Length: 184
Ligand SMILES: [Zn+2]
Ligand SMILES: [Zn+2]
Image (tube, rainbow, N blue to C red):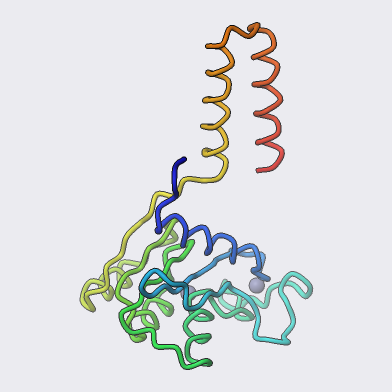
């Protein structure tokens, strides 16, 4: 059995949180981790009790939706709200943080930013992270889909090896791939 890495595990949590996002422009998730424990999580959405972009449309000013609080900010504010220290913690985000979040992350004492996807990657954010001694690392995320595909490959290989009719193997292969594709 192959275990997923801690990085993959925490990023998966962020991807899960992103599914809770209420802004249609970009769905982002963030997970704050200390000593391999999740201490907070956030996604980009409106303030509690506020209108949601998915219901009312985005409130766009200067090409930015101003209705939402970013995922990273929400996760940090959750720590503030409940008095959880963020000094020395790590943050896992689905997308490279914007400038505002970058500054908040530094100021909160976060030590490492793990992210899955590049997103504009503002050079000033990179410069600020570097000056503050915050490590930034892109994590190659193995999607569930590729894990599934690998499993199907193995199963089909075993079937072939055991002398099952080629036609039957091909048939199973097609059905399995369609199943994975439908779920993606
Ligand atoms: Zn929006
Ligand atoms: Zn941001």
